[in-house]
Structure formats: structure tokens, C-alpha cells
Image 1 (cartoon, rainbow, N blue to C red):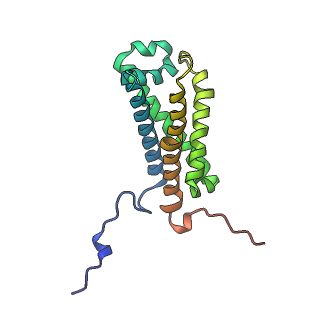
Image 2 (cartoon, rainbow, N blue to C red):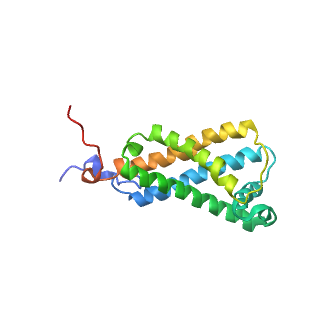
Image 3 (spheres, helix red, strand yellow):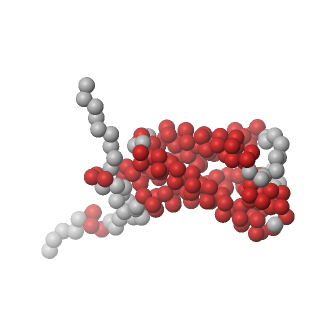
Amino acid sequence: MQPIHRNRLRSPGLLSPGMVSPTLWLLTAGLVAATLDILYATGFWALRGVDPTRVWQSIAAGLLGKASFSGGADTATLGLALHYLIALAMAAAYFIAARRLPKLWQQPWRYGALYGLLLYAVMNLIVVPLSAAPGGGAKPMLWVVLSLLAHVLLVGLPIAWCARRAYGLSAPLSARRRPVPSVR
């Protein structure tokens, strides 16, 4: 009778290195970032008496304008779908860049944080002003500060961590893209 090794008793989990394709990590990154971000936004405004439906409709307002707020559950659902689609696009952009720039997945804490700040700036200084969303005036300073932190911690870092898992830890050694050390 052969002894049973402890390693044979463990089955590889879904998130075990080598078990998940980069595409699945990309989807995970988009879903996690979108979920954490929408929970933050919904929770922040709920504490101020704003119904979650209104928060989600405000996302759809980027496409529909003021009409979004009279669309009920349909425009709230559209807002949620758009939110997840945008987060998936954000994750895809990082993953594409990380394939060409290995430092993005090798140093996820640094570059994920910077990516979160970049996303905040792009969304608030370019995308929202160019959208059909009605201008809501000045935002409360607490919202701005917490949103910056949320984009770093809840969006940028999860995306970068998933890219690390996709390209650094889950890929076979032969497929990992590592920089060639320079000889000086």
C-alpha cells in the first residue's frame, strides 16, 4: 500500500496558478472592479438619502441625458449594464498594456494605484463632461476625496492584481514575459 501524499488530497481551486486563463482573469477584474465601485457609490449616496435606482440612472444619463431619470427600473438596469461594460473596458485596457509593459503586472500595487488615479481623471475630466449627463454642479468634497480613494483601492488595484495573476503567476514559466537582465 502506497502512502497518500497530502498534496494529492488537495484539488486545485478555481484561482490556483495555471488553472485560469488570462481571459477569465480579465472578466474577473472587470466584474470585481465594477461591483466594488458600484457598491461604494450606492452606499455613499444611500447614506445621504439617495435611492440606489437614482444612482444607477445617473450612469445611464451619460447616454440618455435627463430622460434617464424618468425611465424607472429600465434605465437603472441600463446604467448598471453600462457601468459593468465600462469597468470591463478599463480592465481590458490595463491587460493590453500589461502584455506589452511587464512592470504593470510585476508591480501591481504601484501601477494599479496610478491606474486608479488615471481612471478617475479620465472619467471626471473627459468622459462625463463629454457625455449627455446633465451638469450636477459642484460635488461634495468628501465625495471627491473618497472617490479618488475608491478608484485606487476598489478599481485600479483589483484590475492590476488580476493582471498579475493572469500574466505573472498563472502562466507557465515558458509563457511568462520577464525582462531580460542587463549586463553591465
